[in-house]
Length: 414
Image (cartoon, rainbow, N blue to C red):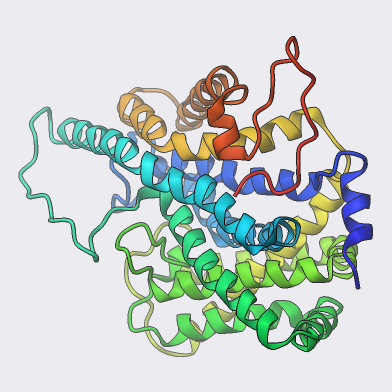
């Protein structure tokens, strides 16, 4: 089935997929919330500094979004990747992704890493009573290279490097697209039943169940260290990217199924998340999961929660965000910049506020408000109307007094 009707229905007259654009912005901006909450998580320190007002409820601000946030992002990234490759051709798409994904990774990594290191040193000195702690910096190797929060760009580059040659090879071998029709048939069948979530969850659930060391409270281990991503991240996020690529082929059917089933999916997601928390506890569990039946059951519940959250939120967004909204459109445009630049600022604010005698919720609100205000202001003043906006988002928005803004195209961000 062609995706033309869905594109028209969702995009209206603008050619833009408002619901998926907004959902991608939510996935990225939830990352700001997640990182801001990490200094407030009690128990053994898991961040550069632990706030004096750390409390158990703040752990939920990490645990729940971490279940689904990046799976949702990579699903949408795969969807937009096929959309853009279909419009631009494989060569044009590859050039576009080198410009907007590869180049930001290469050029922004060093200044962002330097800023993060300075904040980490400040936090360590503050936590150590004003004196630098002893310790050696490990050498940079394939295993220790710090990708920081830009790891998602690195994974996207890997997925593009696999999907584009594979697509070209299949097109060359299978000119009648029988492979595509088989994929379409399987996608359509799975979209109509709960077995779609089960099938997508299965590879990661198996890996969770058998990998020698799995920190189950943290789900998919963030591949932010090392140039060879951990297997769990490759399986989990690679499955999401491939699913998004396949979903684009059957947009009408799949998106309508998500729209119809979103209350059921979100109810299942909430139930599965509560079940996982009952097993593992709200506070971070830093011990690897023990082999056995409980581990297998937890792996199954957690991976099903990943996909029911993903389908449920996608369906809800297709209801709520289907029409153009200037606020959401602006947030969708700015979210890529905000996420790229947020981490050093969030960490600096966490260190600065860590020992103040304010309620933890108030400090978290200050961190988020200051971060968003500064980054949205910098986006508006320095990025949106400049060559930087064209570099990152695929188009530069001319100022209103100069030229009316051109129609934005779907898939502007990564």
